[in-house]
Image (cartoon, rainbow, N blue to C red):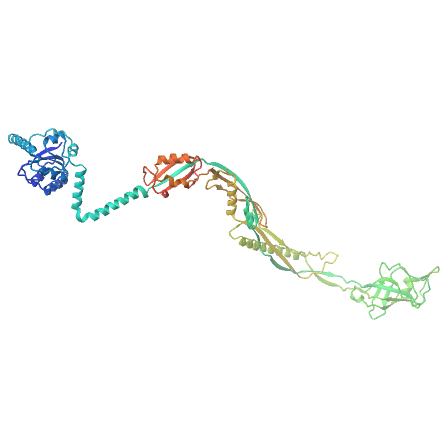
Length: 585
């Protein structure tokens, strides 16, 4: 409750300040100013009183009937009452009164009477009279019942502003900074993330992808473009040298002998009976011949040598002396060394008779085919084994080089290999290896010389890009999504497996993929329409415009406001799957 303090006519402003200081337990004070006092009649006194009022954290009202003091008090901002009765009624002065001489005479007179009564009471009891009903009023009601309306508040503001002088620029700059911070906090910094929950549907697919060489292969669904890889032709020679030997027996010369009789008669024949006769070369060779098995027991017509008939009877003969010595020349003449014992001339109807006049033996062709005994080189079984080992080593070395060459050609692509490891196709061309000879056999082995053999190896493969394979699987998965829906982000695509691979760029892949699809939602047009909209209204609006959305969740950052951000760029629309948490922005 407010405490009444009576001002004496002789009091100065310092006396009023001292009384404020002593009123330690009272926050609300009312100074009753006499009409004949000289304090508070200047603006300086009023400002000092207001300054000390604030300094001691008091709330002060003035009761005075003096129009001059009333005017100063109202302009300074004190609640001002014309009398104690008006104070009790809570009726402060509402405007600055006129300061004419007789404007408040009645009020002054009434105040004088009242002062005298209070003075007597103070003399009798030594204390100021007790507070009236004003003491029962709350401080807020007391101070609100003054003249501090809009005019008084504005006057106080003007007076305070004038008192700042050199600090005005600093105050203006601070106020501008505060305004900028408020704008940032309320309109620019806030952001909002709006998540629209969409029910997603699971989609599983096993795709079979065909790969073919050429850039146009990947333009069709379930196809990718591959590269046919081909290494160069790798060759290597190796030499096989025979180490075996074989002894060959000598071979006799053979040829045909022609016969005619010096005195032969028509119808005479020559018969060989018993052992084959020996025919001796009459030249210096001294080689003798005998008829072969075919010539033994043979009967041939014997023409007459003198008749000019050319000898035409031929008997096959072989040299008795083996080797090259029997290879005598053509047109040789021969003698018959044992003609009497082993042959006869058979005359028609007369039987066998000794040769008469002798038989001429000639050979129009040379005796040939006689070969001396010799030793020849042949391939032994160990030679063949060594050749096979060399060939296998070269095969492995060239195969490794061809595979490495193909892999370098693949670069960053992957060479197609199936689960069995088949992928790089190696073509090996091996020469015909020699055959080992059994030198103990009766049949002579072929003569052998050192042979230079060549191994040829080429490699082919198919290279593909795993990224292209995954993209083809993804396209296959998207092709199974309904036309009015879309595949959600981040489907799971398994590693493609090679079913079969060829060297010409052909490959068959298979992969399993699992994804989720949901109805299409175009969120971009709504971003600008949600700016500065209330969160509740935004939810209702989005659910009505986007039938595919089931839920709407709004999260504001760094703090919540009754409205969404003013800048549409700070509003982020996000779609979330309600089944597996697939999210796209």
